Length: 329
Image (cartoon, rainbow, N blue to C red; front, side, top):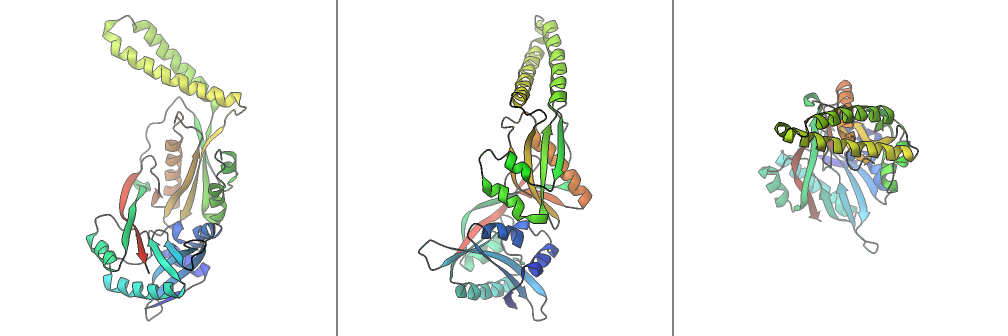
């Protein structure tokens, strides 16, 4: 086998052809990290017939201002077969030689290998890798996705846009790094936005409150309905909070406001949630559920297999990985 640097376009094309590859393993994410002071290199491993056997994007950064050595970070780990131990060991030795030339003193990887894989864990430990922290990814397979019953009292309109201006609008914390991620991902980024129909929502809530109050008034003195009345009173109290929240938006001059937006990347066979902004802090409007429903519906039409994220989202299940590993060189 041989290891060498390759150009960005070739690298991205090869990564996209790999099953279960991630936007984090491409130059698009590397572009974002370069703006934060990293240097990116793109590596390919080929066999004797020049057929690709593995890939890795490495992000290099000085360990400290005065340091002469670098830390190399491989987001989501290597695109290499961890289960082929002899080949992985050869790749590892070649990589060590390359990193020493680059004055790298520490390597960090995040193998996309499930927790409990004793063979891969033993091999990594044998090669000198040490676990630094636990690591999980949250996933929802599009073909298995089932929408839950929507809240009939809150009317949301979900739309997608290729423009990222919505994130500047909702950027309450002035986190320019998040806003910049959207732009750095270029053609692979998409914004999903939840817009509240304030007029229709208020009308639906008013009708529901009227029905609840009629029931409470009719049965409040009947001991047979004590529990039901209590439930209706709790439901009415929650609806009033939702109603008041809508009124606050309107008083601020935001009729039919955009209340949440999710940045996703569409790459290879997966949709990755990069970050989300949600002004509905109390989850009155169930924005995430509605957005994920729409994302899954669109992904199904696009032939995308799953939605994933580094953070938990509704419907998702946690996939625990081996962890984040570091190796001193």
